[in-house]
Each structure stands twice: as structure tokens, then as C-alpha cells.
Length: 97
Image 1 (cartoon, helix red, strand yellow):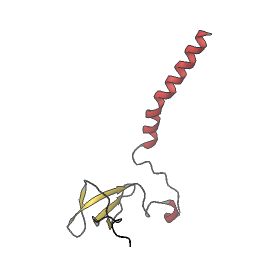
Image 2 (tube, rainbow, N blue to C red; image 1 turned 30 degrees about the vertical axis):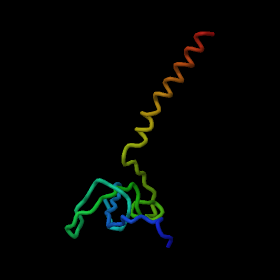
Image 3 (cartoon, rainbow, N blue to C red; image 1 turned 90 degrees about the vertical axis):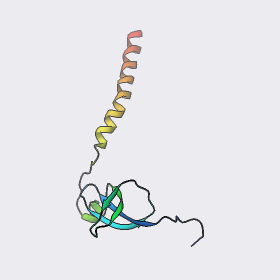
Image 4 (tube, rainbow, N blue to C red; image 1 turned 45 degrees about the vertical axis):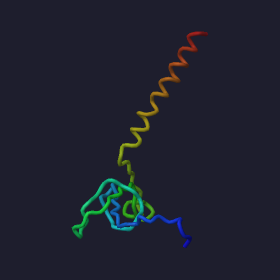
């Protein structure tokens, strides 16, 4: 391996699939502020993931809808204001004619 291009802070980390609460212990250099107590009684950094091999349709063989954080609703709320602005502009331009 080349010197100086790999992170030095590898440590054991718990990855937790938030769609089905499955967790596994692995090594990573990813940063996080959260911790969790693992089965061995030790406390490890926690990294939350949306999809793992226990929830991904390719590995499970079945499709499932995962909207863990209400992302569709957040998207609609965020961009509905743009929809209103364009409709108001369309109305005012039609009134000027």
C-alpha cells in the first residue's frame, strides 16, 4: 500500500440499520459522536445507516419501501414554496394582459 494515503484512525465501530434495527460490529475510520453499548459490554461509536444487507432488496429478495426519515414529506414541504411562487407569478402576468 502507498504510504500516507490511508487514514490512521481505524477503530471498531457499530453500524446500525435503522430500517430493521440490525447492527453489526466492524472497523471504520468514519467519524461519529454517538455511541452504543455492544453485546460484549463495551461501548463503541455508532454509525446509523439507512440500508444494509438485511434490508436491501437485492439481498433479501423482496422489495420494501424504506422512508425512515419522512424524506418524501420533507421534500414536498421544502419545494412547495417554489410551486406557489410560480403560480402567483403566472396569475399576475395573466392579470396584466
